[in-house]
Image (cartoon, rainbow, N blue to C red; front, side):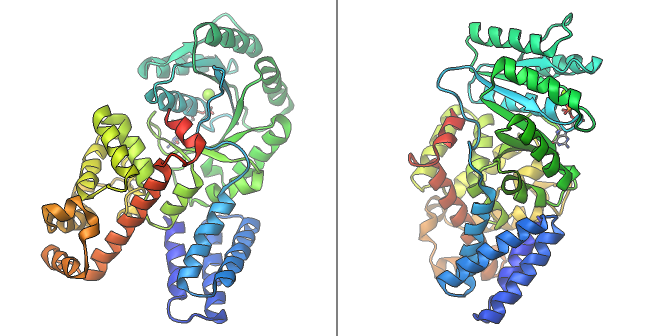
Length: 436
Ligand code: GDP
Ligand code: MG
């Protein structure tokens, strides 16, 4: 998106002159771009300082600059705490959902329920928004639609009481996870805080997620910080990230609030929720795609055997071009097309340019298909075979320049590397927990 483009521009500025002046120039470009993408000025300053220090340490040059950006981004995106969804050793894992009215709490609760159910978890949702008449009804409908268990108490008027009963049911019903939806207000007020604090005290949740509307920009950061102060949140979920947001909030919020960004909502459908894992996001910002997340998402809709095979291949570093085409096919079944695009090497730049993407007929997709079509069967199975003369042949066959072929291959390699890293046994603990 906007961020991705700006990082590329900055890197290009450092291409021909490897000196102090070129670095300054590149940093200046990066700064402008970050501010334009609505990254808070303090976060921008912090990030630039890190990039400069890391670059100088490694010796000024394009490669060092690129690595410094990756490194610094990962640092800025990381805050102490859990990543992805983490289960307690003694179920149920209890999650309290908090946030302002209209921020997307209820939608996110259902999305999270769906996300966990796909990972074979038994999930109970508690309807503790008794503020609005329609709130319980909204959850009833959504839960019925997505076959999620819901606890509600039509005659109840005390959210604390409902939450307690829901927790009892989650325990006796041997649920893995209890998600507690709560009421919001249009702005933070005493009554809202008192109520959610009372619920918090009654059920002692393992996690308190704050759902912030990405469209509210820096206000999302401010309200998250106030909730953190009052309630001690353990994670932020940014909803509506598919909207007209410039992306800067997601970059800064963990650093600014001191709590990890755990998930982002990327659409209105129940499937439109993604775990926010800093290293993967860095890959995406750098335009390298994110095959690991794509594989997870597709695994949820393709059959299990195939999914296992795919994971094995990624683990062994054997993910090849046929698998790539396979994943593209599976993608068609998935929710929001736009959000998927950013994860695919070669297509990541497209995601923000187009609202409704006709992937099949896009120029990029045709190019990629032409490239893979010009490969021999052996080459498709073994990307490592592609030496210069083969690449030349493929470029000619696909009617593309060698630069274009190289760019795609590079992106493909980086994405496969990243996917492998995350699929390894030593990969992040909580990522494994998340995958169930
Ligand atoms: P709550 O008051 O915090 O419970 O908010 P809701 O969950 O009822 O959501 C308010 C509105 O935001 C609804 O129309 C949702 O469909 C919409 N919404 C929530 N999350 C997202 C998202 O990630 N993307 C988009 N486009 N809309 C969302
Ligand atoms: Mg709600």
